Image 1 (tube, rainbow, N blue to C red):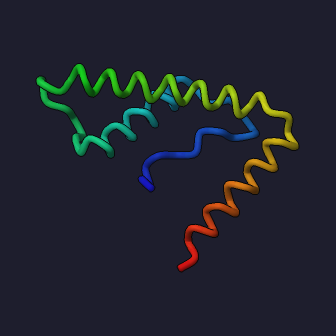
Image 2: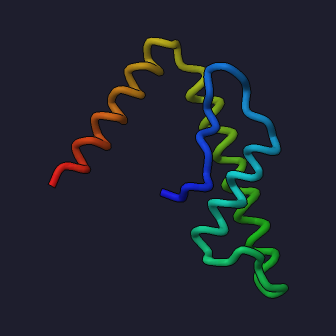
Length: 88
């Protein structure tokens, strides 16, 4: 996991558009291997950032639309899955 990418879903406040864009940009940088894309790759890089940001917005909207008890259950299931994968 990239250490620079921060968790965006927080119960205490809504995520800002700038935070979504920054996380999307960091993800695309990590995947592409480019901190700053060259002129030839700039449009592909920008398109990827826009798509990742759009998917992030949709994900956050759907997760936040769940009733609190379903969100808690999903979080527990995810934690259990991560722990199970970490076992040798």
